[in-house]
Amino acid sequence: MEPIGHRRWAIADGYLPAWSHGPEPEMVSHESVNILNAGPTDARVELMLYFEDRPPAGPYRLTVPAMRTVHQRINDLDPPVPTNLGYACVITADVPVVVQHTRLDSRQAENALFSTLAAPG
Image (cartoon, rainbow, N blue to C red; front, side):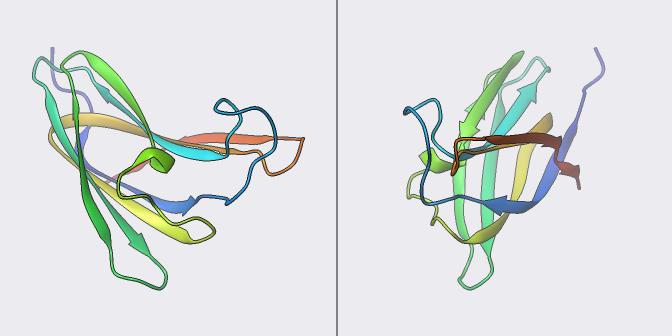
C-alpha cells in the first residue's frame, strides 16, 4: 500500500479551558491530537507547542504503532500545558501519518465538540 498522510502537520487554534462541567474524566474540557499510522512501520512523533506570550514547549514525544491510531489528549502531556491560554501545535513524524484535532468544551452544560483535520505542512 502507498503511504497515506504527511510527515508534518499544524494546528493553529489550540485552547484548554481551566474548568469543566459534568462527570470526569469523560466530560473534562480537553483537546486531542488523533494520529493515524496506516503504514507498516511505527511512527515516532513529536509535538511542539507555540504560545502567545512564552517560549515554545516540547518536544513531546510519542509512538504510534504501525497500522494503529493514537488519541493523545493535550491535557495529559507532561509537563502540563497551561490552561486559559491560546496555543498552536506542530506535529512531525518520521513516516507519513494523518492528524485530526478534536476539542471538547464543557464549561457549560450545553457542550461544544468539534473536530477537524490538521493542516499538512
